[in-house]
Image 1 (tube, rainbow, N blue to C red):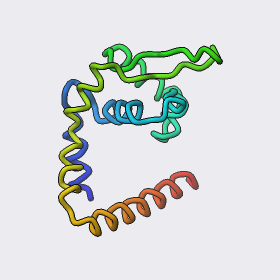
Image 2: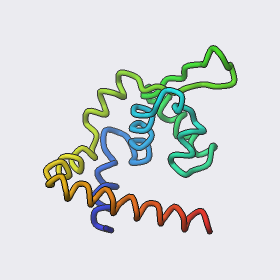
Image 3: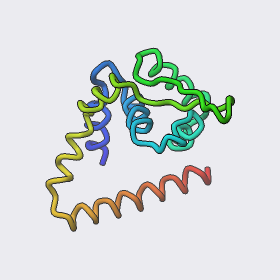
Image 4: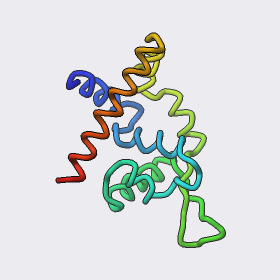
Length: 130
C-alpha cells in the first residue's frame, strides 16, 4: 500500500500541479453542478473551508477554474473547470492506475472496489472519532 501511495503521489507532481490540485480538478470536473462549491469540495476532501478556498484560489489563478455566481442566491458561487482544465485532465496521471485496473477481470475489479471502500470507511470512521 505504501508503495502504491508513493507512486500515486509522485505521479501527481506533473503539468505544474500538485497532487491535491489534481484532486480538486477531478472533483470540480466530475461533481454535480450544485456540488461545485468550496464548501462541498472541503467536505469531499475532508479539509477545512479555508484550505479548500486557498486551493481554489490557486486553480483560479492558473485559469483552471472559473467562478460562476448563482443567480438565485448571490451568496453562492459555483466553480467550473475551464477548457484548459478539461484538456489538462486528459493527461491525468492517475489514468495509468485506471488503465491497469480496467485490465483486471471484472470480479477482481469488484473485489478491489469493495476492499478499498471498506478500508476508506474504516479510516474515515477512525479519523472522525479522533
